[in-house]
Image (cartoon, rainbow, N blue to C red; front, side, top):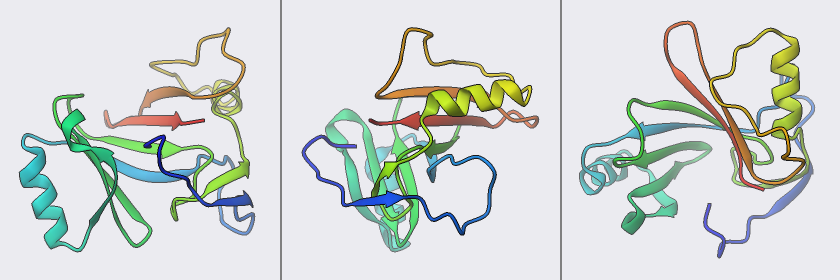
Length: 144
């Protein structure tokens, strides 16, 4: 997320939605060979640029509540991404499940993490990664 863009805020996530562990907004992070060509393709599908920085080789695109990230040269393969503290409507949630609490819950459930929040990290931006049984990478990335 760009630091110069102010997100609207909501008090909390919608408690009526299903799920046992609040993970935040969902998107797919695509590893692309040509950022410009991929941007043009997804714009033809109705997506618009909502964030990112083409000069830094990444763009965030939205179509309604659907979000995709285009990333050139940053990682291999595609990644399922969750952002604690955000809604799919690009709203910042004032009260949300911190990624450290998500990590503890996953530990309690016996989920193996590939990357963990450092033990000395108490608050703020942080992320964890894991891999599902089929080899799909999952990133839980908290921006603030």
